[in-house]
Image (cartoon, rainbow, N blue to C red; front, side):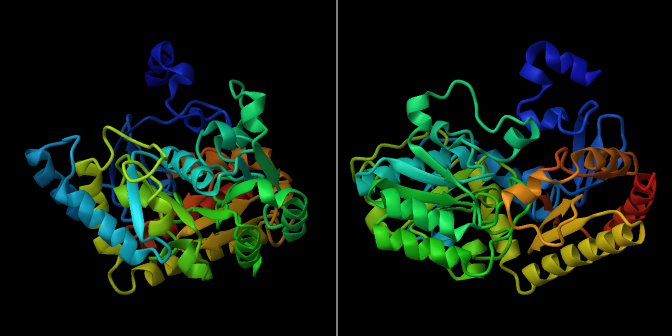
Length: 423
């Protein structure tokens, strides 16, 4: 068995904790290929995929245009450790499409992007404290892995060993969607705060949209106290709208972190903002950041193709419509089966909760979900050929490759799953 072999030489048998299926029980599925909206496992079984490599595959698996471009670049070279025309093109495209970004630095992961953005914010403001929100996950950065979401919630350990108390003490944590808590914190120590980092749509405690006006309040408070506002759009960037969540909600952060979609499924990250702030980075300024594989030509090539495709007229309208049809169908089936069930959606990103609340807006509401019922639902769906995130605390993703046939397959599986959960 592959999982047994993996455990001999890989901690827990996986290279990222949530993949271990500890949140749902059983052994993880090992995949061998993907095509469009479908994944194929090592035993030849096929599944409609709603993980999408955790968000990057907005065009689905093995998109022909991405594949063709990668083949061409592969013949030219895989890495140079030097500037390329491709990375200039991607930087130009990001600055064109993302409202707040005038200058951008490419890195290799979302974690690296948020780590670098925090360092830059501290260097720019000459302050040390950072504010984050309960359940929001910004990668495994020491100072940000405090009451984190994503896999940390799956394992019930929102803090990590190995992080010095002094490092954790640099981070204030407050509830998401709670304006009063933010006002109170800044009234007490706003002059110490270098930055507020937030997922504009919380995607690592499942999918929790901001309350109306909430992001505007966060923006106003940070401006008032001279703190930087960092939007972590690693997940939402080019996923919920062409200009990201900041375009959707009409907010201009000081810094933005990106990843996932801009690499088309290859390892990538980026952070950017105004030219004034970004000028603090080496070699121009005193804030150091570097990376051997940053601007990797394969990742940049895939990202350029994806940005071309999603820029086509009607792309996001279609993606949103498909996602809406999926969620309406799931909600109707759950209601018919009299199963407490709630959905959330922002564009092609969605959440599903076995929960009594009709609207999910807070971390505490998320944590009140019926995790045991989710586990049963997950395995029933998996057995019916539908692959969901193996955690009750992860968002789902629809791609442009998902069509009526995939939605119908999913709803047929869900009807059976909800029926089994009535017992």
